[in-house]
Image (cartoon, rainbow, N blue to C red; front, side, top):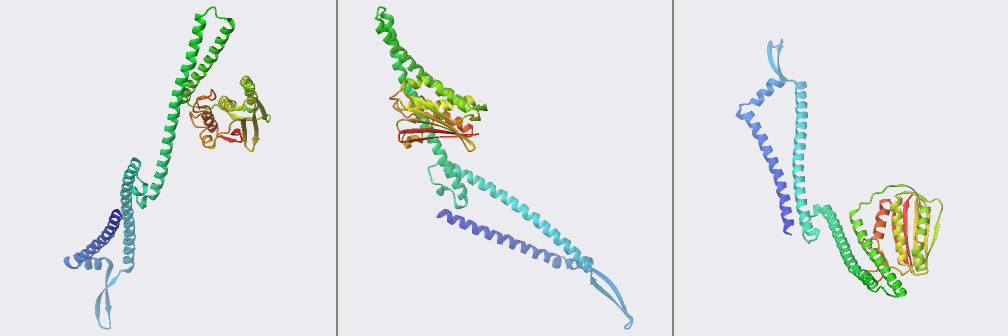
Length: 385
């Protein structure tokens, strides 16, 4: 309320200031006229008479009188008035423009200073925008509210990502001890008991190999985290046969699928090609397929479909497994996100595979999305042809 009263008072003062300037100008004109006409003894009349009149002597023969007559030189007077009028308009226009420019510049500078002060105050304090920005700054107030909300959201996302990363590293560091301890223990037994029965020796060697492979997987997850943080993805595009890439990938995953009793059904049109980075796109498909294998029910089929739809190449990966809740499905492409947060299973990796896949697809100008209903999860990649 106090601020509004001050603003009204300020506007009233500005109006009085205008009237004061007009009054001073009027008084100046009156004094100037009085100076020429009275103080300087009719100087104005003399100047006008000498400049704009001409003297003629006229003889009247009937009266035998010669009369001296002064006539106004109207053509010259009109020319001078026109010139003075044009000069006045021109000078007045220039003065008004300069005044407006200087005044506008001062107002703009003042507005910028005020905006900066209010923005700093708004961003550094927990206050509503309406409490800081007056009505004339409504547009800035709206934009700053959106920017601040976006910044808070991004900050929270970064905090959540950092928390997930720290938790993941903690889990990995803890998990590294278990297989390493087992490997050392079984190898020590094998080293100490040279006369150990062959069957028992094979058993211990098998367990040690499994634990060593688990250890290698955990170390690879550490390397994956480091690579993702340090590398900058640069695309090297070329025309790539997507159909052949999917066939080749199906063959590469055969040993992993066989262990779980899974299989892949590939339904791809022939001669599907796209202008992509072949190595990066192979990584996208590999990460999605690896995720599908990890979370599929044993002895189920993974279906891969690829076809042209309009000006897009659509590739989908569907697997039968536990339905992903909707609130978790929205976060599945976030960095360091894992479905099995408790790491109760050996499935999944560092939680970077799908995040990297999304980044690569986005750089190609495409989209990637996930859908999970009735124990069927489908990842769909759309690429521009």
